[in-house]
Image (cartoon, rainbow, N blue to C red; front, side, top):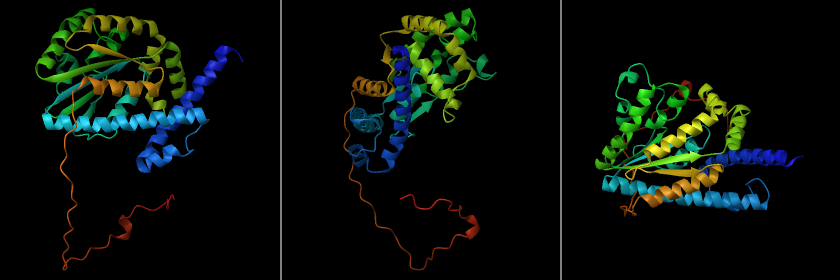
Length: 309
């Protein structure tokens, strides 16, 4: 086996392990997380298991800090917008999932807009994004954003040269206006290598549970790698402003990228722990003249599965 073939096999094994660990996260949510982490339930050799334990422990610690951040945002009426951009399969969705995983969706929500419809194409370009901006006490994560114009729309020819240049004239003023209004605006670009994107696309092609993540536009972006690279370089150079600068995340390693991004996000916001009132479970009121009515048999969902242990 050649060195390049060995590297490909290593990357494939890592991708399989990452997929397993995503399922393992769900098990940790439902059970005793510490007991599972301390057991030998994690796959791989001792070195791999220790690396995974470190990842999960850090992830849960950072998610605990995100809960504190959420309480501070609500208590102080903060408005936070976080923009996630990057190539297809760069891992934006993975980090967004880990940020929102343990937060209140009424406080922290995701805006992932589809392609504009015929009416929206006639609007001011930023108009459909404005309606998703946060009110006081809210965090909005944009899974792709107004920067579509500088990326996919430019590369795929979905906008004119005039619209493209107008975007670059407008976006700095638009973002400065957001910041002046009291919104904290944070922008992340997830950067992966050519080889890593190819591996992730191949993984999605051969995994029935992930094929939905691949669209014709994603496949076309693979063919136009260099055009997207040029568009990204122009975008970062022309929209990196003091009021709303770009932060680039090394994303070839999904887990490392998630931890680094969340850790960095927490360092950008001067949150503090908010003292919470003690929660006391009230006694249940009981009425002696009330009898619970039985549920008709035909309304029950069939119990195809019994106890799972």
